[in-house]
Image (cartoon, rainbow, N blue to C red; front, side, top):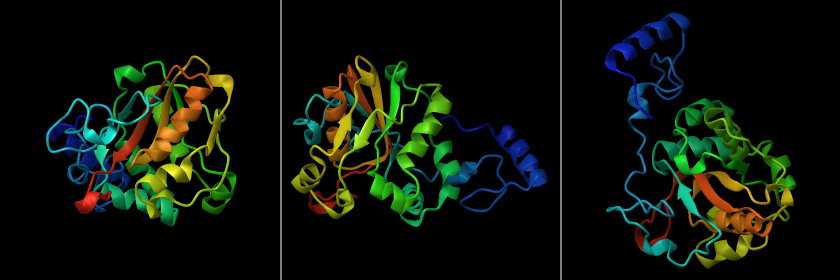
Length: 240
């Protein structure tokens, strides 16, 4: 994502003042949902594992965290780190049901990676009970936004969640993997297709790997994972 030049930025600010449009974060004039200064506060996930996108201090072809991952996941694309202010925006959407942050999150979507040029977009689904409680699926909103930006097909019926599971944020390590094991089922409409599984945040990868396994069992040729943000390790091996 390339920021506008200073001249274009000034023109956009003037137009924003005329139109009364303001930045969703700072309230200043902006021709886009977030102004250039606020976008600069987000942390790109540029130094990371080339396979699972785990944030690292030094780039790696494949980090230790994903060495034992099954082959169901081809690779992960995660353009941003799950740190302030992006973590606050995603939390506001998921836990406070604040849909007004969606334009800001949409502004952070990257250009289409070459590896996904022929992929079908599939959002990580919520169980119908969780869907009723929340009223929307943030992964589906992101998948629809990516479909418009990347001009790729999105399929909301190929993958279902078969049982309610406790939120992953309350669990750690092997408990996350056990929590979502066999929690997804896919149908054969994606047989032979390249799939891009879409979610808001990738933490341990347990949910994405369980969903990817179901998609591969249904015949998907390969499964990439797109997450807007990637969490990294904090002290003690816990995620942040």
